[in-house]
Image (cartoon, each protein chain N blue to C red):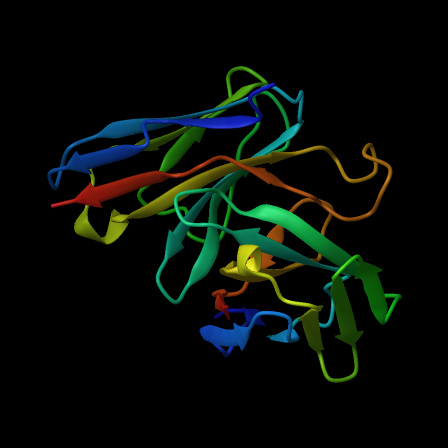
Length: 118
Length: 111
């Protein structure tokens, strides 16, 4: 049981290049999320998905696209990278709180991807 | 516009003493509050939570207190141990699945 895994762990891009970050979870979770963590800002939600084939915008969606073609995978794409997208990106997943038998949303996080855009 | 704020970026405490981390929020609709702990080069892990209908929740060395009227919560760690050195994030939920996070507080436990 690997939990939540992220690929790659590190990446350096030049401005204007594109890339895709892959997130995979083996816990059969319905919900998946992409966050970015910046100094002094905490974790900010980029996009999320409440089920296979669905996606929705979070707090800071501009410049990113996502896809959830399979329940266990959630992909984050940068079509034209900018230096402002230099950050640490975390993927997370969770059950529906009600299905888990409680009312709070415990999210399980991956180890992160450190992205630098030059 | 951050709805969850942790105003102390860092905290240093001696081993065996109490660590108190604070968190303020602005959205009165938040109904669940969570604390996450994060070690370097790892993702955050869930630590403890509290519902808005309670004012205290305890789990071993960790206790979370909620003051709804002041829109304030705190995490107490007693006694603090070297393994508690990490970044602690406060988070709040207004719906089933979306969390708003604070900026984090780095705790250093001195031997």
